[in-house]
Amino acid sequence: MLSILAGMLLGSAPAEETLTILAAASLRSPMVEIQKLYESSNSSTRLEMSFAGSQELAAQLVLGAPGDLFLSADRAQIDVVVKAKRMSARDIQPFSGNRLCVIVAKRAAGKVESLGDLAKPGIRISLAGEKVPIGAYTNQMFAKATRDLGAAWLDHVRSNVVSFETNVSAIVTRVELGEADCGIVYESDARQAKTSKVIGVPKNLNVRAVYFGGVLSDSPQKERSRSFFKFLLGKEGQAVFAKYGFLPAK
Image (cartoon, rainbow, N blue to C red; front, side, top):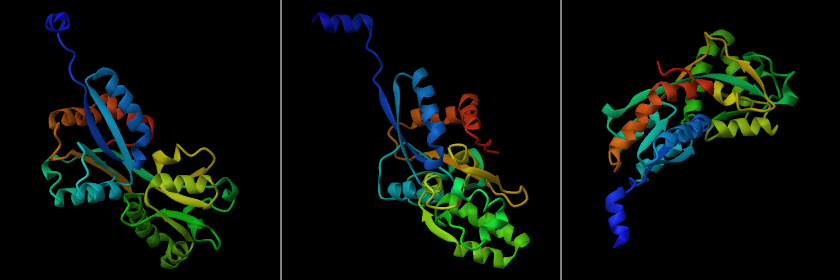
């Protein structure tokens, strides 16, 4: 009885609610920091992060996986979720951006010093599959580069590919371990590489990656989810993305 009266007098603490965020693998570093920042000022909300390739997350959502917010490295995988009626097109917004670069394993630093060198005989390249956002962006970049370097260059590059990964983090790992001489990743991921050399892609050949996100239609906590997404779009959230090498959404 005393505990009940005390609760009535002092008031009960607001119940903690958990938001499940499904986010592209390349977002891991900024999102972990944003999670700590957001939870520190929103004590009644806990964020549960699930990181994987955007195409993997989209497939999970199509199969009915629960979640509140989907953050994809491109629009195509968001559209897959919209088609499955798990998200409304009107709720989709771009929230960050990125560009591509080449990372080169320490042991291959003298062999690969430019985009053109990807076609050299014996160079082992790690890329992502074409349905993975970084893979789709890479193909767009290759299409631009072919105009300058020629179709034969691209044929040689394709013949040098030793692996197609399911997310960009796996490419970084393979190159860092020396299992590939080089790989094409986002500029933000290149910052996480500890031993690899980074080679920029010329501006006229590069591709701007745009990240899209939105609240899932069947989220049981739409308002909390929208509040968190608004935080990502705000000054604090964007500052964290910038810190890790991401670009503004627009």
